[in-house]
Length: 619
Image (cartoon, rainbow, N blue to C red; front, side, top):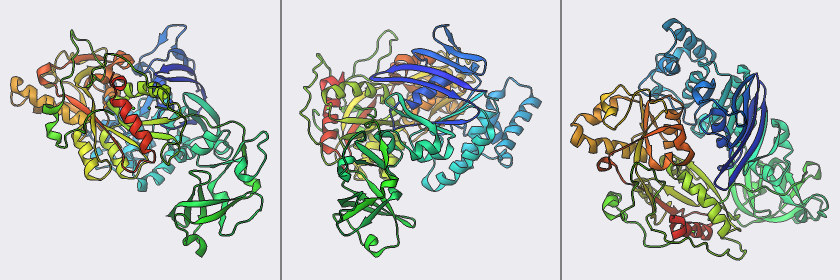
């Protein structure tokens, strides 16, 4: 069996154009947030249609733009393992694994489930509640649920990102062994190069919609082709001038942190340069020492020298690398997905004041859907003149924005808008559920701007000292989504509590989950006091990310879900059917944005926030 695909897709300013050829092996597509890797996965699964291209698994064509073939997800025999595993909390392990086999006889279903549990070595967990499982066990259950469908292609979306640091290492090893045993075409996407090295037979590194290097995992890891791949894979990128070398054919070299050495004295030896220490971190039996030249470089040295253990920020030292360990780079660094900026006063600090203080927002009429609607009306589009080239703050000129998943589409649009206005700044956007983003920022993730889907989580960021002030930037409301075939016959909000509907909603501590429960309570005024409870009994899964709710419905794993109206604008709306929620029951969901106090690019982050709040950004 093999997968062959040619995929082309334009999303905002990003042109995704990749060719894939995978035999019975694991291909890991690795790259930073926004590079297009998840788009590739969604196109292979059938959740998103390419603009053009072909997808073929074995002898079966799943998609062919020229021939007009586009099989829906449920007909592709493709197994998908989601980032957060997407298990049904009210079902035990056996029921979760067999959830998609309802059309089979009882005997065949039990046989298939038993085989999958045995393959994943989790038969002992069959009667266990999934809520009682460890992260690694949940991952195995999710993988078993994909494999029980006997897929001809397996897709894994960031399979290790939901795990804590302590669990991640051994689960990574277990997953690598399992994927090696399966012997079916497998595509994994991840932003973590360490995960890619562990899981892959081959690695394809993506940057800005293109595969910039591909090959055996060991080759990509040890021989990066470009400065972008070198930096992404953990190498230091050393300019030729830093090493007093003539540029010639090579303007830069890559070296692994473990191949660099430090000493106190200045020297003129080949492969040496002077630098200042920016930070020192102990990691097991090794010391990680950050350098200011080149910016961001880290040296990995043994923790066995008094000179090294006494190093502190600002100390000047000599760095040295054996020329034999220098790997020449033939191509300049690639450019990750980029982005760009403030009006008015900070938002009120009391999150309960949300509804009474926010200005009115225009609504969709006649059943039409709107994307995130402007809080500041824009009568004209004004593009600021490009700023003069300069160094922003003390960082590397790259801004990192942590953005609530409901703002994915409009924020992607701002990438091209801001990039035209501020060509010297680049912005990387990471999209996820607000609670997940906030947790990552609290744990020290490098972020410059935080866009939250509600004020409650932004207040938590204030209390934790992560932001000082924040601003309302957009507003949206909720809708019901069902598969195009609408198997449960849902036509209204009331049906969620009166029909046997397999419903997916957000967990109760993320914005979409909070708003959904408020909608149900509002409707209970007219539908009866027990309406919210009746609907809750139909909930088969709760998700931490609104995109996961939408994906489960699009893949036919649920009969209905509740998402934001902004999630079903554009092409996403083609994958589901939308059922409006009566206006009197909707809850106004406001997004808030703030600059992270420890931002390495505070001036650039301020320009980005100003752009978001400007008439152009609001439009």
